[in-house]
Amino acid sequence: MQKYSFFALTMLLAGCGGGGGGGDNPTPNQVKVSSDFPAEQIRVNVSFNVLGDGTAKVNAYVHTSTGESFIPLGAGDSVVLTANDETQSLKLTKDEIIEGSGSFGGEYYSLVSRDNYPEYTLTFVREQGSYSNAFTFSQNDIPTPFVLQGTLSNEVIDLRWSPEADHSYTLLGPTFFCYSGNTVEVKGGHPSEGDLNGVYNKSLTEIFNLNQSQLVAGKSGCYIEAEVLGFKVNLNKASENILVDVSQRRNIRFDLN
Image (cartoon, rainbow, N blue to C red; front, top):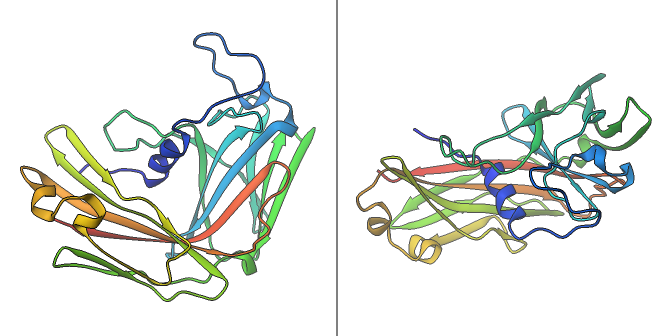
């Protein structure tokens, strides 16, 4: 069965309509990279997602303060993670939004770490240390783990978890996926955040404007997937170049046929 990438999907959605920018306009087929810009203009957005299985997925994408989005790291530039006395460079990753689709969510960088180290430092480095800027966070900054439970009954999706004080929660999805030959149909619900207090309860019609029979008619391999992310509020999460979102991330899936 084909698979999709929530990260690539959300990156693509975040990038839609983006734009603007300082500096010269690139010539046709010219791809700007991070080393084309002064170090002070580089911004690295990092998602540090604790997955509940002992691992943490680290994803980063590079943009600039002048409006250039999803740019590759240029020669001499790198983003590194230091944890447990080991330093690793994040590697270029190009997840297809949907496996086999040929569509990607932009240039980003990633690695998989462990979730139990005392401290983590993310650093943007230029030309072997001629410039560097770092952001460090500790175990105390990682949100409290939670268990995501859910049902799909009588065409109502019910999600529940135990919220923590001084935490906020964001729901990605629910998102509907279905396959018909080589065609993939995707219907997304709008992300929900801020007002989630451990409960999400909505009918399929409320989410997708269609009931289950209408959603799956003439299709196979249909399912709905949702993710809940938990964050600590008021966490200082930025340095000059690095912006880090530290989350607990939980996923749930409902097969429809």
